[in-house]
Length: 208
Image (cartoon, rainbow, N blue to C red; front, side, top):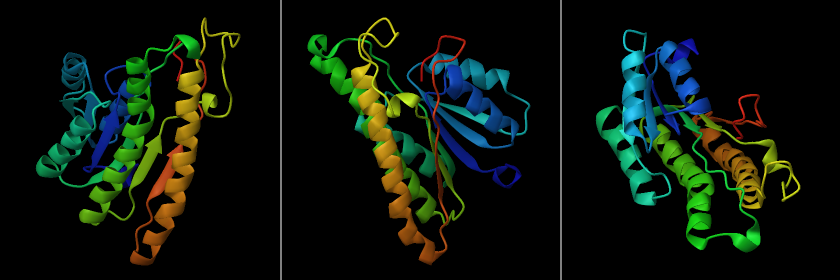
C-alpha cells in the first residue's frame, strides 16, 4: 500500500460497515479517499474522526442508482483531485422480497445500484487512470458468495434474495469481462489490477 500514499481512492458505500472500514484503512495508508454515500452526515462525521491521520477523507453525497449522480462523482474527483489510483465498488442494496412480490421500482433501484453503478464505475475509473497515466491502478469489486448461489425463500435470510443474488452473479461476470478487456491496455504499459471479493454472512449480521 505504500506506493499509493498521497494518491486518490474512491470508495462507494463508505458511510457504514465494510465501506467505512475500507475508507478508514486507506486513509491510514496515506491516501486521499473520496467516500461516496447517500448519508453525507455520516461521511462528514467519519472525516472528522479521521482528521490528523496520514491521508484524509473527502465526503461526497450521491445516490448511485442514478447514472447522472455517478458521473458527477467522477467529474468532481477529476476536477478537484485528479486521477484515481484505487476504486472500490462497495455500495449495494439487499432485497429479501420474493420475485412474485417484487416492486418494479425497487427492483430497478437494486439493479442500478448493484450492477449498473459497478459497470459504469469501472468504465469511468479506467478512463480516469488512462487520462492521468496511472498505470498501476487497482479496481476492487466487493461481491458475495451470493454471486455463486441463489438464496430463495428457504435460504435462511428471512425472505428471498433472488434479485440480490442475480446482481452478484452479474458482478462476477462483469469483473471477469473487465479483466479480459484490460489485457488490451498492457501494450501501452497499463497494468490495472482487478480484484473481486467473496464475502458472506458476517457475525455482525451484515450480509454482503
